Image 1 (cartoon, helix red, strand yellow):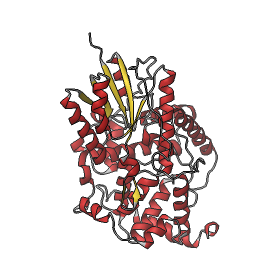
Image 2 (tube, rainbow, N blue to C red):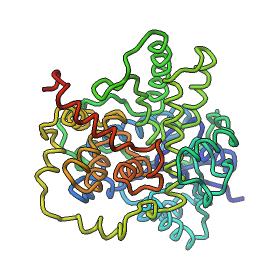
Image 3 (spheres, rainbow, N blue to C red):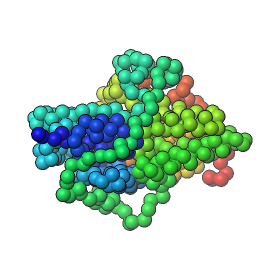
Image 4 (cartoon, rainbow, N blue to C red):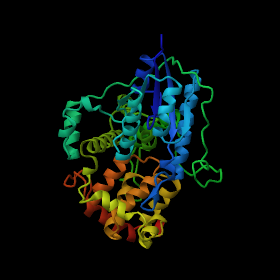
Length: 430
């Protein structure tokens, strides 16, 4: 009797906990074949003067893949690592290992969705099903109080109705035992140089170590800090000192930690310490992540209320160098707070939300440079880059998102005032 083997295609879901795709694959197969593809398109392609993946996120990714591989090895198996496009290898892998079904998490970005379509078409020629899972959001789409097509475009309405009428499901447990397909050569994790990065072997100056265990440990620390700092008076956040910042977004972006795990750990912390503004801030961030993902699921690139968006984007490739843009990237604009945040972005791969709003405001409304250049540069540099959140936030700042009238998105007058004040009232950055 032929055994059932399921290929589990990992993408931005590099964890064992709360992973419905993995749990179902283990339950419905005789053995699984975990696979991760290092897709060269994410390391070789450059557009609009920026790479798709910068060295900081490249390092974080390698650490996260290595951590998941180690977790599988502790369970008696491994994860097959392949350098190449999924659509160039998946058919051969399915034939070689006699795969009966392929599981993967569905993405909402147009490029990622197209890759899934190519793989699905190839597998169809072998009469193998590609099963889609949705594990990147706090709320499953079927648990929302409205169908995708009727999701409110205004975030405040989405938040109100979702919090009132939807429930957050409990997390899936980590499988206690996993049977793995036998593989002679599981492949090697490439280093940064093999992915095309210039790197001297020194650990980059970022705040994050990749991987599920590191993410959960970091979350525990954040919750302790979030409770502790709120038990004593703290200064009002400013552009210079933004206050408590929940730096869990990098692990969320690549799926080392699930949003539901964050939610329930925050709720547990609230049970111990009570609610406070820090915990509310973390939960609000999870809702914003959901909102942008569902907006792109609903509208696609139609989310951008800009005529001929695709051609505008294409025409920017190979365009003449813009000196003001290059100064903005290099953190030498002469504006103290903008340069401070851009330097932080370039060296750590992270800046808080207030910093992102300020540097985006400066690029778009002071330098008068098209927002797409800024979004593309953030795509390269951010260690917590997530397509929907990054491009959605930039669109809101530029005033071409679907929620431009909401008071909860972007207040241009407020941001411009902060920029003006920071020039005259920032002696420490002068």
